[in-house]
Length: 127
Image (tube, rainbow, N blue to C red; front, side, top):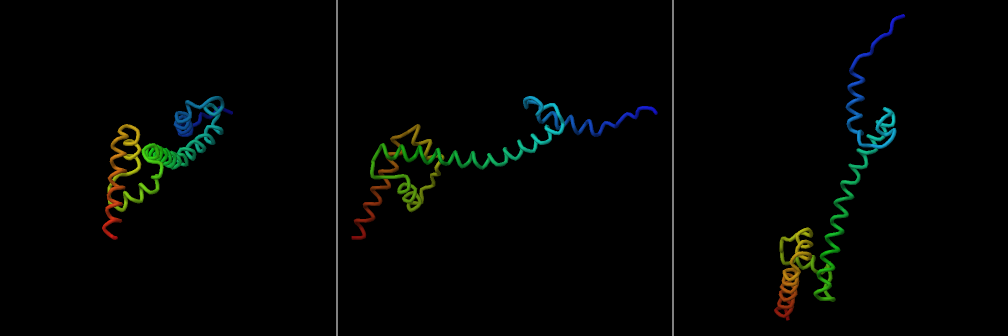
């Protein structure tokens, strides 16, 4: 019985998968079954960690803002700042505020003090 040469379609599919996992170590880049499993696992991790990365970034921004505010005035906290920013309709998101807290702390102090002054003026006008 003569040997039958297989077609190129399966080989082309496996080569395409191997290109995805070429940087993996050991059998994760050599054996086709483990390559397929590792590809699925990698894609799931990327999808899951995209949201986690956004969450971690937001936590970092909040920590930086809170640290910058508390160095200025101990009685003023992050939650009060955000609440008052929304009341005054100042369009500064957390990312921008975190950059201001790191790069230009005086500007953050000015923003906080301005909000506090407006808050005190508002209280006095009601009385």
